[in-house]
Image (cartoon, rainbow, N blue to C red):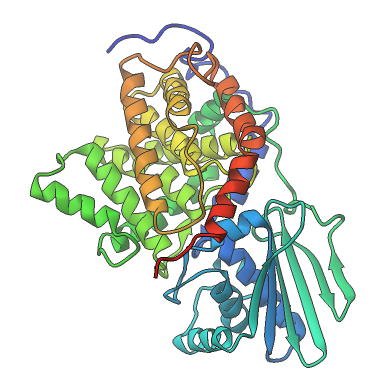
Length: 447
């Protein structure tokens, strides 16, 4: 293997003294951002608002008026809501109200019954559920107003998928956050974080403090096994597996990474009633940050400690990169989660922080323009593309090759490359996001 050029972005930092000052923030970030979620988190956010509003109403709901931000509308229009077999935000609001657990957070729809789903579908068919775009500054915003007779309860969630900022009953404010743009309780701060510090944390943090990340492997692998049945979404994972068995795709580690990761996304987007371990508010991001690492760990016979440290590196690197992006944007964040996976896989195969940094820089040079055109079954294709790019970038890095700082938005320093990607998403792709939503909401359906 060629030795990478020695530079601040590629030096091996495994033996340097770890900077523990930010470790409490890293643990807080992992605890808040790597959590179980049932179904796509944008429809789930609206379902949670409806469930909380219905509890506050205290009587059977006659009608629901839902309003969401443009970005949440984009991400919720085309995804199957778990346990319903139905796509979209209307069903999310209805089942959230009728059968949702108001204390369930991202698992608000766990335990839905067939009767509740039938009641929700009837409510929609009778025109008693409406949905509109809310004119709000928040990128992530979900509001449910439930009504019965003259009583009305309104619940608003903003900026994070479970962050309730306002509850009103008949115009009277029952709860209001400090501002309607409040963040989740006890927010973490990664402003001073660096890829170097993230790597050192993953290598040296006591195992007892990251043991909870083993659940990521368990939950997302269960989704993968379910997706391999071929019953969900575009059944891409199962298709790739069949094509491998038929000889049209080569068998091997890359194919195993693609099939098992994509199958988990198939199941999640296709409405499987199993939770995903999410990352940065997205089940697909959690899958992309978990499954490639798990597959490589199995391939190399990694110890439990090595797997836990690889998962920690993957998930925290994904959170760190995503913290430079808007919560929702025109940039497909599965790509940034897969950068985390590249870090975890590189560690398992080489152990060097320099290899990790090289792989991330190459991925930024490869995938920076992939758009998010809403949550849907086709997200599994983006997952497949992203983890394929991650594996390619790792193989390049192991050979001492990367996209250099002379090319495109990539800088020599990995953290500068990450900031450049964030600037692209925050500033350069705003009009792209608006155009995507316009196209999605005005598509003509052929007769």
